[in-house]
Length: 330
Length: 197
Image (cartoon, rainbow over all chains, first blue to last red):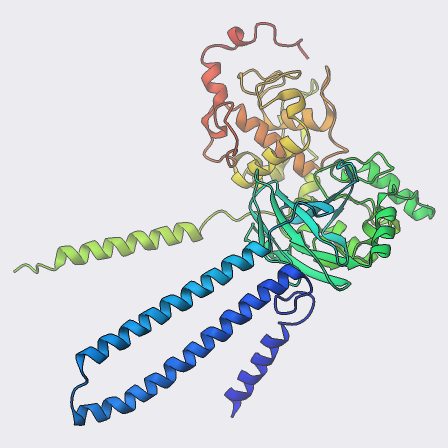
């Protein structure tokens, strides 16, 4: 009585994982739709074949008992049956291979894609670099890619340390980011929304805490977002935030992080110019709130052991002020 | 009377023993210290220098931890990462020097002790070495110092950071490169090495 209930419950939990913001079975972009058709096609075909085999096995078992009593089957018939089965198997596997090949080919990146965004993976976060119309980088963000809806976006994928893999299941297939070898990926969202993705290649200690958010917006919203991101960070109006800024610049923070419009020009950590406007911090680990910012700055190694942010000694006042400053960077 | 299967059994037993020992060695690896307790990290700042700022005594906690910034491969790799990140190569190149002095020639202007190297990084030195105390945490400074000491070491260390993917330009970190050059004599390598401090 108990086992079936647990089975049902666990199936329910598993299936509920197939919907939501991160699912290959819930596609919202052309490349992801192609992949879904391929998966569903192969699963249905394989299911039908499995059923046929089971039916034939049952028939053979029944017939086998009769044949034992009635006599032998002829050699010629057996040869023909086996040959036919082999031919059908070869045809089906060839068919699935060809379908897979054409699906992969249809996902190629058109050189005409109007928008190119560079995504550089690092242990363990995503650096996202937006270029201006002339191709020179204009601003950076981290762990969050904004794209306009209904437009082909070319992602140029790079890595600085080890092999990572970019995977936003609802929008596109997987693509590896290999040091020294830039890769391309076509991203296209047909519906506005937030699509979650994550690194899909084991890349070290915090591989599971390396999420990326793709925010698809209507072209007008996207243009507004670009304008706001291009601007330098606002000078803090609040006195707490102002002393937070002073502490940030005096402490080792500024050696690794950039805040445009200030003297902080470090390049090894994420660009924090508009950190307050991002959904999450630490690559999807925590929502961007003042509390989680404080928790992260106070002790990054306990929240995400092995990451490259050191525990900087701060007084509680300095910590509060820096968090107020971070929060004000919208 | 002799059982002919005995040699086979001994072979199987030896194989199992080898696998067991290998598994134990893999399991019994050095624990990686990712989060230093704040009091211990603060203590790293409390080393004592000689009046001329050359050589001195590391804090007690450093010995209690087993001199980990010199001997632990993880900390050495972090030091190597920091060497690149904090632009040390701008002046010191790949360790062979440039604008700043070389680490590989066996000649240490302020001595090869960890405290001297830590003090050089933390407080800076005359003739262009900037102070990094407001750009790195003290723990990072010790990690970086451990790496710098390793690449200019007279005796090869058993621990070393991971190797570069790109072309090697100098002996690997664990080969005691300073010794190779130091054997030829420091005077020959650098007759006019810097002013006395």
